[in-house]
Image (cartoon, rainbow, N blue to C red):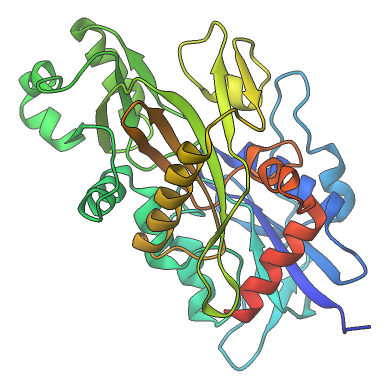
Length: 364
């Protein structure tokens, strides 16, 4: 049997998606192949402290009664390797003792949003030469910034929804600009923070009078905000995996669809807190031609954004073909999340998917 690898499961963080990251980590911990991997759970508190947790601490990381878990400060500190000459983590215990956590082979981040999914953690790990699951600094940062991502992908020939971008500084300098942000766009509009995920800070706007309040909600999450035209089409999602040994990216053999049954859009409550009004259809009913168009656009987007490891790519399926909505480089990854479910429907189990992602990180 091959020697077991040691995996750091990294989760939590300073973003508003802290709790979802914790739930994702718990799902991974419960399903990772223990015959192949030893796991060190490392949490980052909302204040940015990197702490060592016990596996039992994650037992309660579940979505129950609308509550989200949190990494609690326990007085420990985990220090990354001091140079590229070692792969060992150091632990400072709550009473000040210094000890080694031993050699680490790979880091598996389940962090969503800023300070985790945006290239910051990836840059830290690159500095100390620790392999990690997922995209590198450039791909992570690009996909996290909706304005930059849409600009790059549109230039690569990928259809994206029409949009305008505005900064908090522009609004403060010229408040009147808010009344003209809908020029050239089609209602309903979606107002979004440029660098947030899980629909945090997103508002659906049906008339100009609603724009100021929607901007306030979005600016609470980021200093850069997008105002997008609503796109008429089915909301579909496809999973992408990096190819082995330089091969082309792979996609799930099915797509999923978000079906609205009484909710205006797929917001945070519907995604994570079980709110009614949205159903997930998996696999979605599409023609072979539609599936091929979605898969082609997904692979081209993955390559154009210089992604690695994994991504869930969301589209609007219109009469004229797929229009890209957004790229998620560290998508929701609980056993019931869309990304692992797409692979489950494609014949790759949740446990085997985790193994594949770790092996891709080690190969890279």
